[in-house]
Length: 124
Image (cartoon, rainbow, N blue to C red; front, side):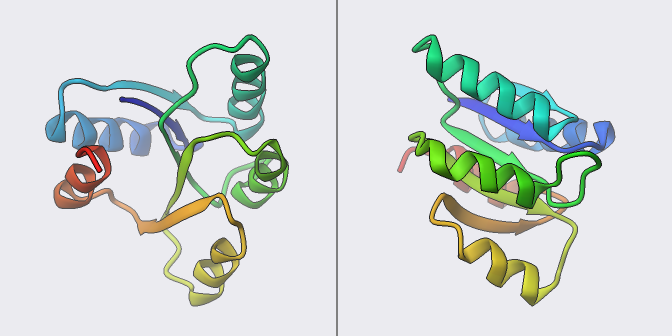
């Protein structure tokens, strides 16, 4: 399974990577601290018909391009990627807003807990 983490906090990416790898060793995890860089990489992978991530875990609050701006550009691409918000937000407004995007499959509050990590990487 190929997972893309998009969160400007390097420590959060490290903790999330650890939780995911504890759930399954058979993962390729790539972390981005910039939503714009992650989006550029996705666009390039799709254009070159390279392997796309199976899952993206996306933070909301990031500088330059926040999670909402990422979603506004990602959704029209209609890439076959499961995307879940992974955020420190506990706001029902954010949860509702995320639900308005057809590409968002879940809303997870940080930190990523072991049982949630297992559910994300286990075969459907």
